[in-house]
Length: 128
Image (cartoon, rainbow, N blue to C red; front, side, top):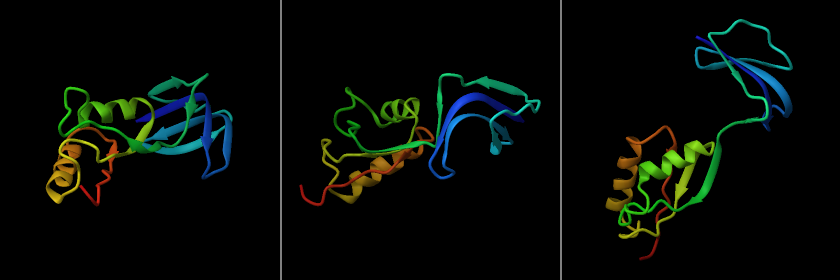
């Protein structure tokens, strides 16, 4: 399958790109990035007025699970992160119970496997 993303502002520090480009994706891989691509595609996305960039990383998020699920769960926090363009997040350990032992840390890791494609990298406390 081919997807063509047209006219988005591409910001990619790895390649030094910062400008308006088209991106051709073939079989879930970037095949070309250029000022104008005229290839036929199964799907065309008009990205005019939008940013296109690698996934962002948030090193300080406050997911409320375990203990405060009525405020936010690992799933809802990860979904919000993905909506904002974040592909990796590091939840803080200030939950109840605090993430200060292997069992609680493992609970978060196991729960994170089932929620989204966001990488959830929990931070644990070294003291209670």
